[in-house]
Length: 239
Image 1 (cartoon, rainbow, N blue to C red):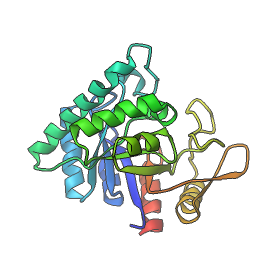
Image 2: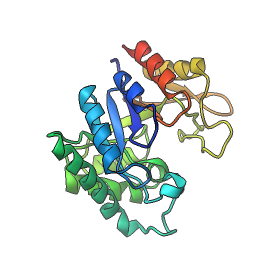
Image 3: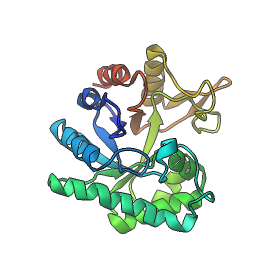
Image 4: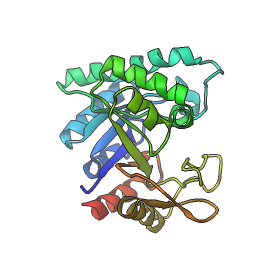
């Protein structure tokens, strides 16, 4: 493919198997916001069968809210973040060991991802955890965000991530899911956004106008209602 296409997997969706043939990287839930040992095994097996790179998708321990509520200072303190991330990497690597394979990257999930994108201290804790566990792992993070700065400071390879199915704010952040305009549901709009980001290095933002963006991997959410359709369209566009 012209560019890496990643998808969040192992979160209990029944579309995972249908999506795998069209992606090149999978971010596998480690059980803290969704999934369990069985779903991790099934997802790792699907990744190997489809020659897809395996990544960890660590999150806040918040299954009730699917990891989409920021828990920092509300049950989780910043001093706990390193252990929080490392523990999830250990869990998924143990599953990978059963299949004789290894992790390729780490992509934080949900509220932890969004907090890290704008909070350098949080990004630094995540990067410290990755470096302690395996410094060869790549960090997938929001294009141009604080995660990039933290990764560079910790000697980690950073992969600038853009989103196929989310809208953007003028500062480069994703539109919050609480907004009715946060998700892209129209296939034509999804493809137009992907093509502009990859080929022009630009993305349209809410309120009008465009901003520069670095696209090294495209994220597609596996729990989206159009996930399979979007995966096929992006694969065809980028093949």
